[in-house]
Length: 167
Length: 180
Image 1 (cartoon, chains in turn purple, yellow):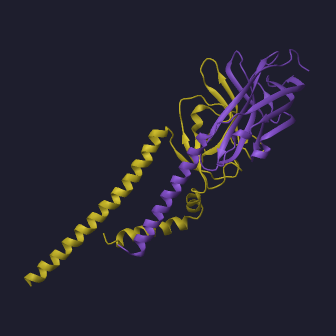
Image 2 (cartoon, helix red, strand yellow):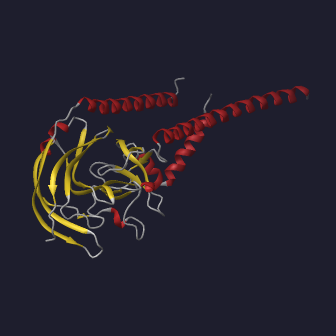
Image 3 (cartoon, one colour):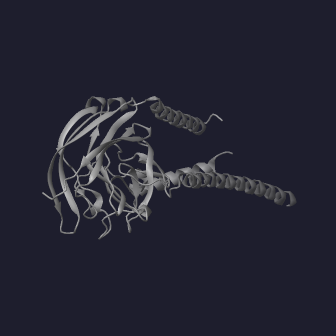
């Protein structure tokens, strides 16, 4: 009853149980946080708008992305992954989501930002449906904790429109 | 002569009962582990409810050795979700983020492109020859939660199988020599 084996076993079991409980509580504490994020995106310029040889249209944009995601950080947050997606509908596809830019916010200090950039990932349609297309720009974020459950949410910004003609 | 044979018989029968109860105990431990594993598969709806992160392609979010909890629901797959998928012909699952989604009006079939957060290029180079998109049947689950560092045991056991044999041998020895 008091051999080394028994004692080691009891100690390790207790240690693992306590650790698991602490991780669960840390994750649950994230539910007490109610974030109030804000974001704004401006399309400064449509750099070019072409149809590729395979029939798919592609557009290049220059964007100003500004956001304040500071309220999302808790003591259990490791990083917030944020990305901007263009979302639109075409006759063939009920939903298209194309990620234009993404970034990693490692800490609260970096969570309020203004980025001036061209799209990091190519905005290519499946087909040629983009002329004069109205689309939404949605800022998505993914809160990745130090341990436990991950949270994701988004802000939808509407009212953007692509030009009617190629340029 | 008689009593020698009697005492030998009694000793043999005690040994036999003890060994049998130890074997049953071991069987109970193994089958309850199996029940928990299969139960997790049922609850999460994914063939592989827990995976270990093997590469650095999702750093700094997921490091090598973290474990991910997966869940697969009928909800449509959307950009930003971290999914685990298998490429045809490879059996190591890949954990990356969805960056492009095209969903068909008529069939609801979805075409997905993924990319690791820490990679420069998207995953087209990883897909099978001629394959440009992933579809729902490639996806094994969505990552919903994670625990850091816990998966290192699995990585060590996979990369240095010697350690796996040592641990199994030690456990076997422990079971046989335990007093009860």
